[in-house]
Image 1 (cartoon, rainbow, N blue to C red):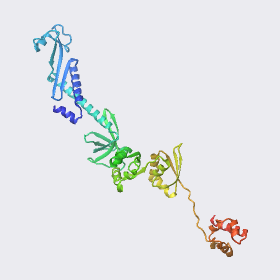
Image 2 (cartoon, rainbow, N blue to C red; image 1 turned 135 degrees about the horizontal axis):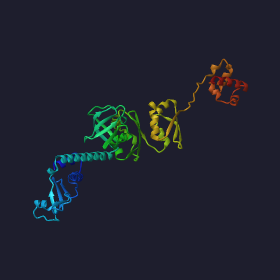
Image 3 (tube, rainbow, N blue to C red; image 1 turned 60 degrees about the vertical axis):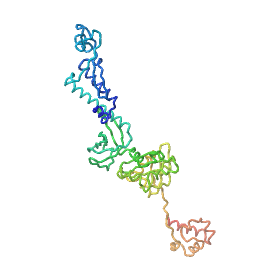
Length: 406
């Protein structure tokens, strides 16, 4: 009974499965010893700890024995009970001691391998249902290409090098959190792969830190990451009273700080999702300030125009910002500098005293034109009307002033 209880508790094998496995293993052994296991009754009572094997054979005349496995001679039957007659069924108990040492060892090995298979199947099924969940484990061993992690039940989990954040450094015994990425059977052994670089890991961390996400008031629309460097998370609120970005960041960044620490200081941008693609792209490229956007829906391409000083912000370190914005919006984004008009400095009319006579300059000043640009802003006709100057003189003045700015 203690042994059965141990299987249920430690090996996580239920009662019905354990009984079925025991019966299968003993039937296999009986078939090896007697040639068949059809005429055996195996009685297992886990609650009482009973275990019995009974063999059923038909009584035949001493000279008619053809199958010793299914038949028993009258003489042998009467040794068990004198009242047996030909044609009756004899039921006698088979003791484990009758099996012999070799068969018992074989039976034990068979049972052990079946239980191991069940354990492996249970581990596989358990983690198959937990894909996408965060697991906390303890670092047991570190290799060049992967880390071996043990869960609370001592099951072996693997974090490959490419699923680790580049700045991750662990020692034996360290606690590590990661998300179950995939589960597969390799050489009949369950292989459980964990990831710290998956966008799902960041999504689950937000669910843990932000109750509104866990409760479904805020939805994470999409997560894109450059692990250990930068991430962008698009969030949407179904309640107008809740600011999704503010709820995710928390008071003075209290909620997001824990996530940033877990991800080795990964820079996380939380963006308010919108179905307006131009506005969404503008938000995705923050902190850069955009002047204008041209969207081509057909080939999912966007041209973004910014001031020269904003281009580096839009592109980001090593192109990280624009790369993540493209992934987040599902649009290919090209950034262009907006052509800026260079304003030339205005020049005072007195500066042209070498080329323009003083009385002409004074005449222009009398109508409020103190600088070169203020003269050029007026047409020649206006200047003729407003001054006492000849048209030819005004044309010469305009030529001199234009030459200054060319």
